[in-house]
Amino acid sequence: MNRRIVLLLLATAVIAVSATESATAAPYIWPVRRSRYYDWNKPYAHTAYGAPVSLVVPPTATMQTNWGWGVGSSRIERLDHQFMRNYPGAGYSGGPYRTTPIWPSDTTQFGVYNVRGPW
Image 1 (cartoon, rainbow, N blue to C red):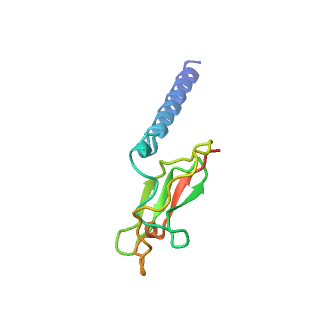
Image 2 (cartoon, rainbow, N blue to C red; image 1 turned 60 degrees about the vertical axis):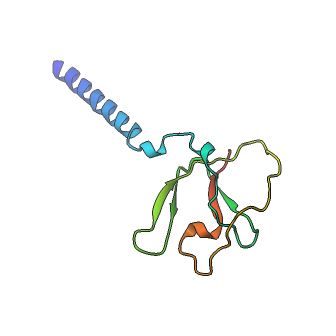
Image 3 (cartoon, one colour; image 1 turned 90 degrees about the horizontal axis):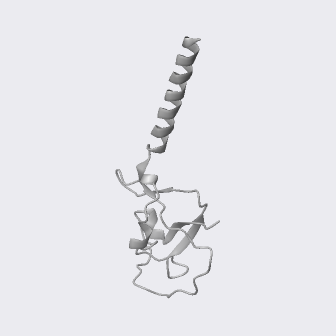
């Protein structure tokens, strides 16, 4: 009888430790209010629109991969920005955006940027 209780307590402790490790395993995904301090786009505009374009991804997406041409230039970044449910109104157009280079060297130079959806 004592052996069963000890095994039950040991199994409970192992489950508790594994649950806390999985909750703290990825601190870069923790919800930090970083998005209010910078824009959702980079300085490049989409060639068809003349302004940056947002690509809506599911609200559960937390990371994105950006690819570059060259050695070690692919990277994984957080997705911090999210659309609000209410339409905030028309924004300004134009801006200091660069056009897509003739030979782009990174996926951020195409002018399409991921933003999480509100639903």
